[in-house]
Image (cartoon, rainbow, N blue to C red):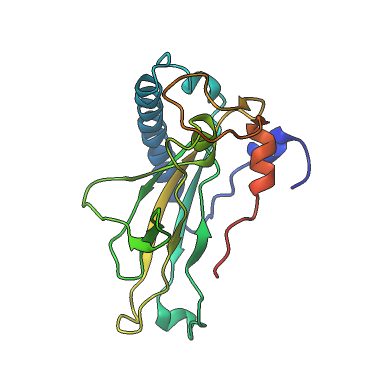
Length: 209
């Protein structure tokens, strides 16, 4: 990444002219998710015996991103190589992520504490919520940032295509993230780091294998 933090985090959006309805739909989705994320961060703070605005006061600059992730069908992409995934194992870099998922056989998996990969439960009408790396660092891994991946399209369902909508809440670039001075925090001690520096270190960390 190059340029200032502001240039990297607040780059202009590029809206495709051939899909005129995308901008208003994405804007409405973003606003709704921002409200949900703020509510969840307030609940998280109270659960840790902190002031309810502890996290939201450190996430004031609209530091969030929205992704529309399309996972094409096997019949569209052709042969899937051994070990190739729709999205390789990764964690979410920010505070938390909200994912509106479609059900499917080639879907989301999370890595359990024993190292095994398990299918993430799908509940119709519900969002999947992932704790991010910043929240894990703040809480000393009491709330872990769980590695997850997206499986390739199955052979027996060559036409399966999935679309996920992901809202990723971050923190203000200058916010120092360090283990909370509270008994509610877990045992892991990370070195203090600013959210902006950590985000730079995580850029480009997701692969397909």
